[in-house]
Length: 196
Image (cartoon, rainbow, N blue to C red; front, top):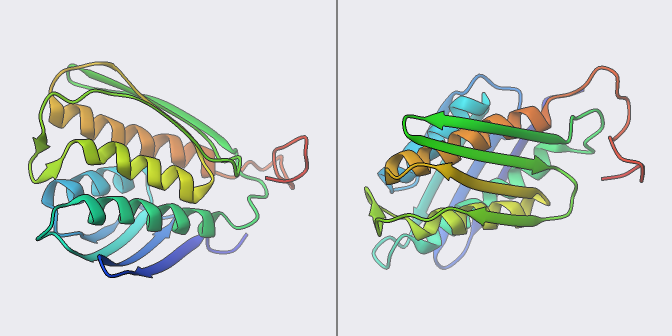
């Protein structure tokens, strides 16, 4: 199996985004979105998933953070899909329940090629740092749709908004690492259909 790297550039009137992800990395990052808390969350995702991740975004932050965050989800989803290639030999499924102090977050993934997004999380603060908390949902929804990923995210316990967000991103990293790992017993895609 060759290097599983996805690299995607997307330029619109609202954002200019470059993303490169290496699925078999070491958790090294170079992330600049212009939104400090978002950078922190993306770093947590990559570090805990052991993905090497470069993200550079020039967005219309003078409007608000919406386009920057949602479009980053779009491009990261496309880069993950590209890095997966034909998906031969991958585990396909991944799940992780992550504790972070008082918070408990669950993430479950199926890299089926069919996008579906389920979300059960309520933030009590409008903003977490310089990120609008409602945009975390939009980021993951865009990522799921553009990677063909079945993605379930759920908060089981917790109340600190920083912890809620960070637990979601970390659990996503761990679950995606599990789903993308290769299984030595497989020399085809893990599906009765014969394709993903």
